[in-house]
Image (cartoon, rainbow over all chains, first blue to last red):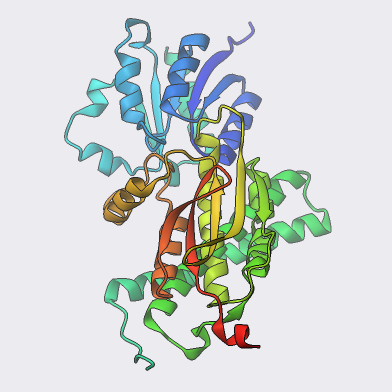
Length: 131
Length: 243
């Protein structure tokens, strides 16, 4: 049976890095839509109805956290798995003390400096199988 | 009178040591990628070229950081200002930047028309600062909203009331005096001191700021042909004017 293609929304501000992730995930059966910032990501989510979101926290103007609060405020998007793939070390995120992970229903937090492309793919495959 | 060099703080010493150390792996990455391209030992020429450009740019940034510390602490007399042409410095900077701009799909332009005469400046310092500023702009530009799709970075020079301005300009409306002032305050305490401009720490901008400060110059918000930017006012070389 053919595997269903996963629509993934990638929110990544760096053009070169986004292109690398995009290429690799497309090669592995994901249909990737890319947005540089929070505003563009909301528009893209509205148009593409993603099955999964991969999000950087450090964005221009509005942060990834702001995007996620907005994203999760819509009932349609409350169940969509979100993976944080960020340059912000997890310890800084956890120490914010707001229980963000729980509030925003983050499925997984990957620190860019310690995550290879294949690790990212493994996590996404795992989440898509579970969904 | 020449001031005696002063000691680096412990944290600066450590960072300088790391900066010097990290140059070697960056150089190795860059040269390995270049060799793979030259020997045609890779199937992915585009990927190897990308690696070379990114490593080279990172190397330039690290180098600029080391230079900012050296200038600030006057390690040696080679760092004294000299008579130079702004146009030729901007031209050299653009040569360093052209591959990086291409990688980010940004059009790099040089606007050095007009006769401005020589200025008194530390050449390497100005060039490193311009490369740092432009690199930060190039990285930031794709994330900006461009109604006219103007992803242009311009290295430009023009005359102003106080002297000759050398700067980097782009279509970044969020770049203004208030943003820069707030950024300088947040620098060192925030991950994104210039949050409306860049998704990164904008290290290139703050390294340029440090280099200019060490050269007794001040980085300022400036406009050039409807583009927003950062520039520095340079003083004409009076020595050459006599000639």
